Amino acid sequence: MAFKFTTIRPLILVTLSVLILLEIVVLTPSPMEDVKLQTASTPVAGILEDNEPSSIPDLPHRKVAEYGVSSFKYVSVQNGEKQWKLDAEKAFMYNPEKLVHGRSIKAYLFDSDQKTTVITGSEAKYFMNQKDLEIFGNVHTLFPDGFEIWSSYLRYRPNTRHITVPTSYPVRGAGSQSGGQTLEFSSLGLDYQMNVGQVLLPKNAHVTLLRSATLDAQGVPNRTLIESDQCMMNRLTQFAFFTMDPSRPSSTRFVHITQPTLFTRARRADLNYGDFTNVLKYLVAYDEVLIKESDPDSTSLKYATGGMAEFDTRNDTVTLTQFPQVYQDEDTVTGDIVLFHRDTGVIEIEQSNGYSQGQERSPGPIAH
Image (spheres, one colour):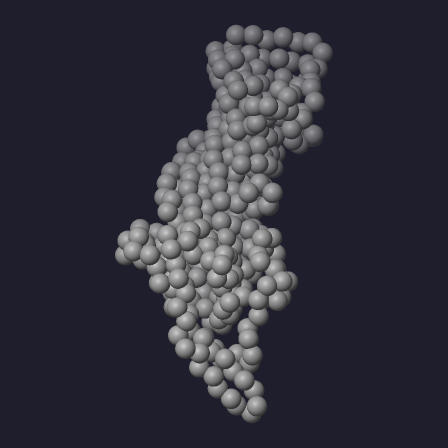
């Protein structure tokens, strides 16, 4: 892909002994690509230089840009369809590198329905022979449905509608869900496939689901924090899948789930964060599940184990299956199904097939 700069003859104005230089820069694209550049330049005294400190590591520093433009506007178009638009208070173009550096920017990302995701940041850069857009410093991303992401760096690949943040950068996000829930998350790095609505939190994933106290009787107000190595969120189905790094030692390879009165750990977990008035089982924990009462003064469930635990949001119960066992003081009860009523502390055992008394048992150390 080839670009050439065409410089329209500079307009020189002399006012009160101040030399004002205005240049309008036009990019001529190759036939393979339709790219439009619009600039609305404000008169600037002298040459507009890119000499302020920058958080972009590979800019051609200590070099004067060939062009400096204020009130910069750029539209990237592919096959007649707008991909993204960039507005910047100032922009600087380095001709040999075919690099544009913008300051105080606002970017608009367009999907196939022309719904707009808006990103603001301190700086941006892109190469005019490529499609990628990189944004640096105080990056805030607002999606059409109100979902938000904060980071200090973000890269957008328009050909695949792909947003990435490396794991060296902390990321946090939040969004209101239907039925009065709020979803919040943090992680190191992010990978968002916008076309299919998949968000990967690749490292140190923390997801919090806040269930509003204004929900009707079919849904219990609560706060659920899930901590894992990775989390894959499908924003179309409103499911999140939590897993651990298989290279971890077995003793620490557990997803942790913390609620106001209950702690759960398991090898993996699934969260349905859709409308709780329609969702029955909103959380399922799998494999070597441990459930422990977090209230030390409680006289109900001390801890229980099993192969799977299902959390019912309407009835506020936990169903434990796959060889469940309940431990309370010195007593141990086993059965096919254990049903724990969280509101009353009542424990139901279906088809109890074992009961023993002895010394009080402990689940052992709980390590992440």
